[in-house]
Length: 157
Image 1 (cartoon, rainbow, N blue to C red):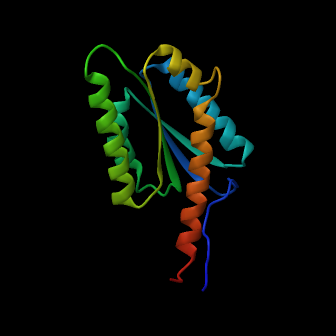
Image 2: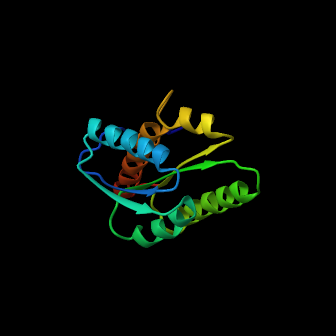
């Protein structure tokens, strides 16, 4: 039996990454972005383009528009905080569906870096106070970009 394992790594050299970030809840999304940029810098990513959109709902269409511009991966960043209406559920559902759809249709890793939070305290703790999910999402972005590069170079079955 022949077993081969394929996985990405955390080397950012030569990668071209796009980040689509929501301005809504900008105190938190800016912290996510800072964490992501810190990660990209530490891992040697040479080129990052940032696209700012009004809210998380606008992220999927923007990702779709830039998916064919030669990026190795795209990171989508936003913060959704549950309120008293169904708006949170509707937006969260459509954003996650849209991001997944673009990734599958375009064949490019699109990392879901949307923080869904029950309240502001939870959102703050995930966006930089206790831990910065932006850094974690950026690591996933680098790893998936490298995995897709390896898969593109490997013509074996």
